[in-house]
Image (cartoon, rainbow, N blue to C red; front, top):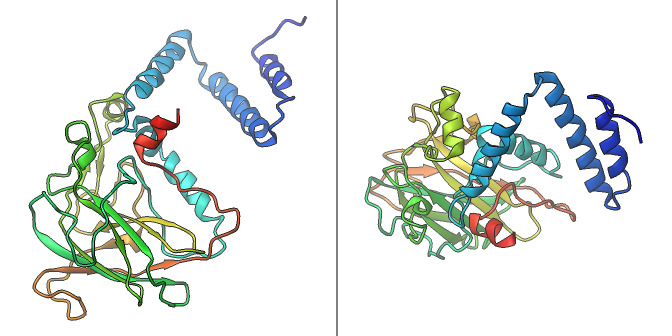
Length: 300
């Protein structure tokens, strides 16, 4: 038996893990241990700070429910979700419309709606239209492409944040027509403060960050044989458009309603026109960066 010091302990851990049968697990865990140990040595982590970190991560886990994913929120505010998403984009065979974050409020059981219907079944607000086409990179229409949408209401609140998440509103699933066209009605979303009543919110507050996301509408767009697109459209007039607390905004995704749009399929209300382009999917396509909170809890 050898005595360990603050450097050799890292090698000892790596040696014990070297026989891990799963090659990818071995690679990931070895890198994690090296970086984690280097971090502890770099900041000279104290026993008290170590316990505080353990307590914080415990609280993050305890805050997770089928309607709330505190760990995804933590990943978001640390920019890790954005980083994983950016790296995932680089694996695409073809680069379509820019992606954005799925976020912690996606639900897989949203209602199926007909084109032109509103996703605001219960929420009041200033109504406008969103319309466009789903095509490949060369402009070829993708008939019957799926377009899932979800957003906050005019108060900046998602349905999952109301009660225990039993409310369903401000979201819907649509199917494009034969020309790849879609349109639906909604109300203007409000930018919002991320949940600040949990451990992640306390962390953001302690860093003197504002904690706001600019107003946006989430989209999940797909068609057989094409890479699934997770993205969002951000409203240009939001005061936090330049300082999104989860780093999800890009210039190509910033837009605003037009009061008079002669091309809009419905008249009399403001309209946003945005076309989505999908790239071809790879045979070993990786999954989306995020999930329905209830799926994550159920899987474990």
